[in-house]
Length: 273
Image 1 (cartoon, rainbow, N blue to C red):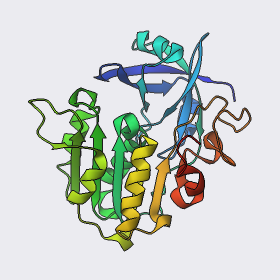
Image 2 (image 1 turned 135 degrees about the horizontal axis):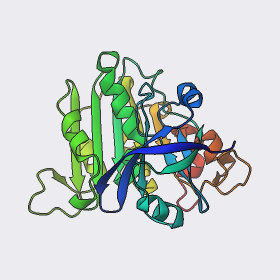
Image 3 (image 1 turned 120 degrees about the horizontal axis):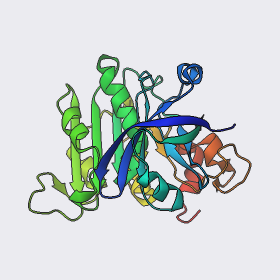
């Protein structure tokens, strides 16, 4: 697939070194035809430099633009950081699997994230909030290393105001202004009540965090088939050809990044695979 030109229509600084770009596909016909599901990603191309996989953070019914939250860590994202509103990037996608939102209607949704791992799941939260009557309780558990790492600060405050919605934040290194929990994100699980048989958990972040959270959820009776994780790997081609993102027998770019936990548990429980 050849990247299609997309204009930067908004650029927001979330925190130091992290930006959210709202992109609008320039071709009107392609823009109208573009469809994705929460959890999928696009390859964002900086012309002449290269491309990177970035999760789509906006709602699938928002046809005005596509949000992508980017951490500045390499050559491609370094170029993206210097771009301004009105500049054009290339876009190809969407790729990958998606969160089981249609199958989760009527159930409680537990979102557990760490660091920038909230970016691939923010579309889940927005999806549930926009369709609040179609889901049970929404419990958002998010951990960060330091308060300055918190992205989507205003969104967390807004989500907490919705009915039947809980937002729990924690940090390892609180400062004087921090008013939330202190500790790793898995300690937040002890602060929420669960209806194990009617809950589905969606997790993204450091794999050690997800392993620990999965173990606790399983101990509390949440069935393994109700746990989902989004895996980060070095995705290059996005179509399962180059093998850079291989996890055991799976190609994360093609059959992931969202996996039902029991499908990859064998590989996932071995750190370093």
